[in-house]
Length: 193
Image (tube, rainbow, N blue to C red; front, side, top):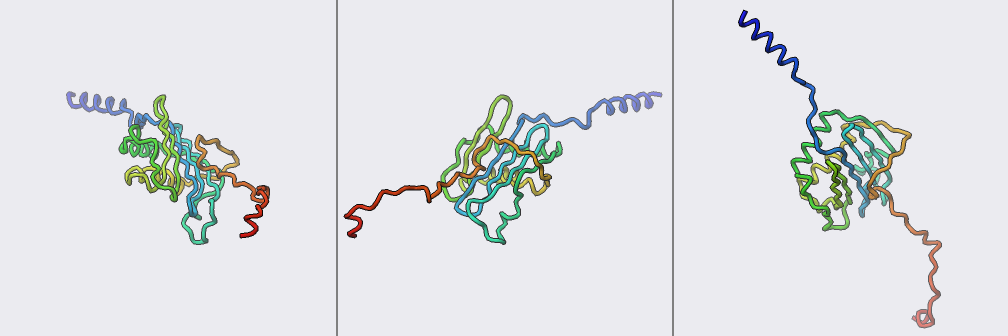
């Protein structure tokens, strides 16, 4: 009888435990956008939030890329997916490992590599970071590129919806129409040379 009571109490205890309890994550949303470079960097934006919504935008590149360039495998247009609680937890753990709250707000020591803009919403705060990919410490770059390349494992589906992102980095800078630029006429001295 004594063993039966212990067995029964054990079952009651185990059944009362929430085996599906989610991890308490402080991050509510993260957004990363990639911008241009002096090469074939695609303009992208990714937003992932605590409701497990995954939003992706893939745009064009500033410069045409060769047909065999690895950037050609990126998606173009708007895409949406739901991520798993496990993916969201893993992402939060990775951000905690790089101590995201204490990161600098600028890692811009170079100019010819891919530009990044990151927004991390946590509590009532937003960590806003601007960076050039080569300027990032390796551990931080690994986490940010884990998110940037997450579309490969998440496999979002195309959507007709359009999303608004906080970042402006993924938007191409409009180039002036050179045909409308007016130059002053050359001076007599310039014509002589």
